[in-house]
Image (cartoon, rainbow, N blue to C red; front, side, top):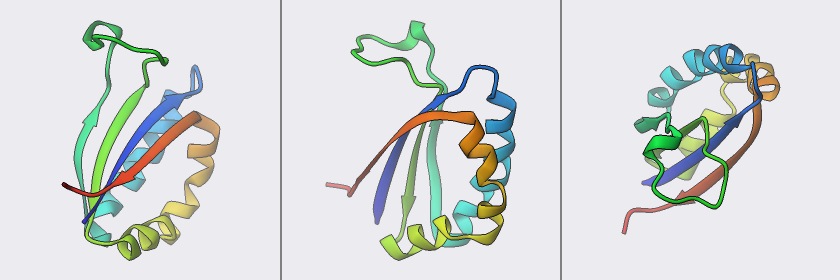
Length: 100
């Protein structure tokens, strides 16, 4: 298994485009032996300490293998809506690891 944590920052006013992207892409995860384990939309109230901007969303996803994750990233349906991701996401941090 591989685990991915994605910290996502959105362009102001582009939340709808981001949600449209997620509505297509999140259901595709299971097609590639993956599972969305956690999806958070933190608020400033829920943050105890920080040295970075509060992200719009945080996702934790698992895939059975790197190949499954690579296949997910290459999915034709996902690629058709990548423009929504590009116009809505200001920046993101992707952390990849394994369960210890």
